Figure 1 (tube, rainbow, N blue to C red):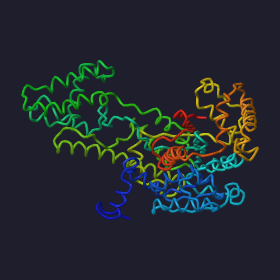
Figure 2: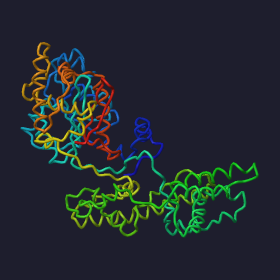
Figure 3: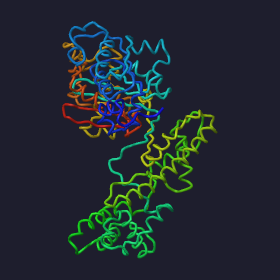
Figure 4: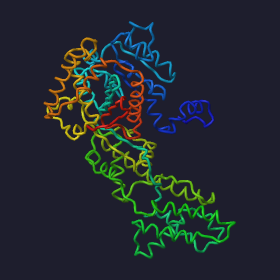
Length: 535
């Protein structure tokens, strides 16, 4: 099916609606988002805030699972619920309100608890791309965690409690194709140009050009010319140290200077860009460690019928790297000071090489898929092209199972708890809180006259947990007392902040862009601090 014309109403309306997010994750990420299915367990204030931040950017569909009725407490904390809805199905009302935010999104609800669904519909949660569980008791969380871990469905566990909140992300294996690194040098391969690029670069002798001709030479050609001069003086070695690069830069500066002021600006612009690029473009390239680990991974070397398209493409990439010694060319050029013809010619050289390499990897990936007995459309040409373009950004994250963590008889927290200001203390308290809820079927301090008695119970439970983990540290009473004072209450402002953070991590998981949380995020609104931990 052909894509709509650039000026068609369908495309222009969508581009206007999602303009800001398309700049973040592009058409590829938006397509994955629009095809996603998300399940929310419990439409609390935090739960609806998470879904709100997923519905607005246009997830495909969501299902709310919640067997609770709306209470006065819900009205006080949940922005989406109103007084006249007290006593109504929380799942139904929340779903109706969320659907009003974006007509492109489909939504449904089930007025039953997650525990009831797991007992009567074994594979219900297996059908979602992500499951978000909010304020779930430990006795329900444990089997859900184990089930989704076995099904390889990502699980996000969240809780908002007074001025405190946390987010947990459980993923068995998550692959990232486009990591969006904070800083990355353009991929120009001056250390090892392929024949077509070398022929073009070598065809220009800067010293034979007159002043006007020199002013139109692309900076890349200038840098290549003087990089050769540098290597001739240093036995073919590339500049590695700072002093070496300064010497290369000086060669370019000396050649680019002009006494004619009328032409000085044009000369300076392209030569100064060449000087600027000298820091990153002149060094010999090296495959990033995180990519090399993927190419050496057991999942890349020994494929099976259960291998994902990512690993099939990675296996084809591995073979190319073994043959050519480098990753595919990205095929893009930064903007440069040069005449249009020179720049476009240079750009075409890079694009043709990128296309040639991606086509070769696609053919090999398709052959690997056929040999494994996988469907013909396991990998597509567009996916392979996207994979190759971002091959230097590939990451694989392998997480841990929350159920396994909760069943550990020992847990090393010494490196965290030695710091009295570490937010890891709240992890311990929240683990104690969840056990308290499972034992007493209520939050500590939920009744005003029970704060002090519940404080003693919660401290006892936390003490047992620390003993089980082989740690003798005693938590400060004020930390535990503060959690008891919350009485299980949610504050909408805190849930709103956490909801935005959680939705951001869900989008990362769905789009396979940006590196997601691994695996615990804790937020303390009292001190306005947050921390992440890998447990």
